[in-house]
Image (cartoon, rainbow, N blue to C red; front, side, top):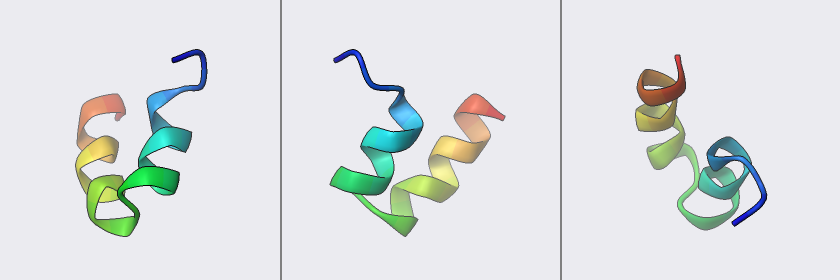
Length: 26
C-alpha cells in the first residue's frame, strides 16, 4: 500500500490500532 500505516490504521482498525501505531511509528 502506498498510503502510510498511520492513515491505514485509522481507516481500517481505528482508535485501537492508533495507540499501537503510535508506539510503532513514535
